[in-house]
Length: 319
Ligand code: NAD
Ligand code: SER
Image (cartoon, rainbow, N blue to C red):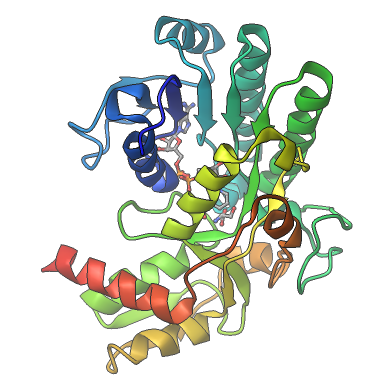
């Protein structure tokens, strides 16, 4: 099915999520109706699949002109600085994560754009939130600058929806695992690196300790969740800050054991670094019953099926 009449701008299209989300949106809306943009050079997997422009989301005037020139009706804002990189430069992470969102929300309000998508994260939760089955509504005291910026962003989204009618929708993604594009500086990146190293060297030194449980999700589930949320009728979207979203939870030891079923010689060692402290403040598992009830969310992949698919696809990349 190709949905027409919408013109979509994806900002941050060359990142881990952007590459796959842009491709999925192009399949749904038609290649020419999805304009990909990023600060970086066009990602090789996007080349030849649709229009691409270089754009800095921090330049509001340039962004506004781009949106008007291309008759954009929906924006997916994916540009951000993630948790681990953010701790190295908190001022920059706050500035980019906040100002990019405010630029997009303000233009959406002025130009009455149809829909905006902006992702939040499990990083909004801190050490004072319940760690298991973390509820949608609970104590939220993030301790990383990334989490603080995501929580503030959620409040801005709800504010623009309630006060200006901007149809902005959001998901609190868990750590995302993908084989098409590399992760961009998060605490959950180990769960992607481990597959690459298992195939390349049969050896991986993990930067988190063996029993660090975190909520995770396979990229194809995350893309489907995003599209299902954005396609849901407006009356079904009851949470205007950001929806909890759950896929699976595992520790480094468990993902290692799962990989060893396919690559028995794989060796996993542990050398926790500054990212351990970030992970220690995050939930171990997430209660996403609001997403299930409001717009019918259900994940497909578990650790075993994801591992099988990751290894199959990465094997063909390495050969
Ligand atoms: P990423 O770092 O892989 O990609 C972000 C992209 O934004 C990059 O290609 C970067 O070049 C681009 N960008 C940075 N600054 C820009 C600017 N000023 N103008 C235009 N483009 C700019 O990140 P990702 O993993 O794809 O994450 C996308 C969104 O999803 C972020 O908001 C992130 O916080 C959120 N998220 C990601 C995960 C995950 O596990 N990947 C989990 C939770 C939430
Ligand atoms: N995967 C992201 C990170 O680790 C979670 O938002 O930063």
